[in-house]
Image 1 (tube, rainbow, N blue to C red):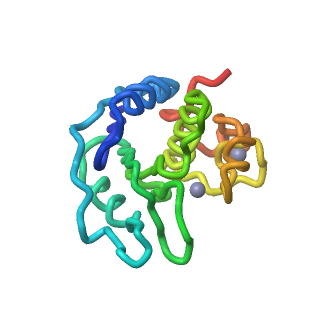
Image 2: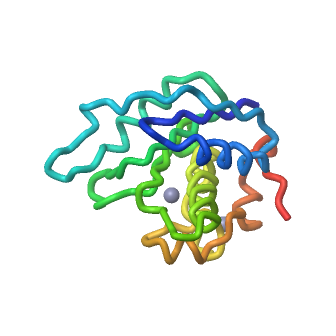
Length: 170
Ligand code: ZN
Ligand code: ZN
């Protein structure tokens, strides 16, 4: 199993290294690609945000069992004002944005990133939103939701996942 991390724009190297390390919970070979430019047609000047579908579709063209795009620009997808990330349900591609995740405490920032990553990857494993507010597949309306949920899939979610991607969880 190959898990590809594709940065878009200027994502700090440390963020990428930490993400790859934290994704070690999956029994997959994790590879960080060279950063790609953010396509200008993704930019909406009125909103001063980028359309997440465009980055997602670039990810879906890459090789690998699963592709996780990451960017530090703010993403949106109609009708939502912003998205923390987006993914193909049961597909291969996913994308997350760190734009709304910063926290003075770096370990909280890191925790938020891995939660969003595990959440969007969960969609590629076929998972939909979970009503358990502690489960990583709970839909985050705000950072309070993100901070409250754990970075693990609940048992109900694990039960519908493909064995290949069940993470090593405490
Ligand atoms: Zn979701
Ligand atoms: Zn769940």
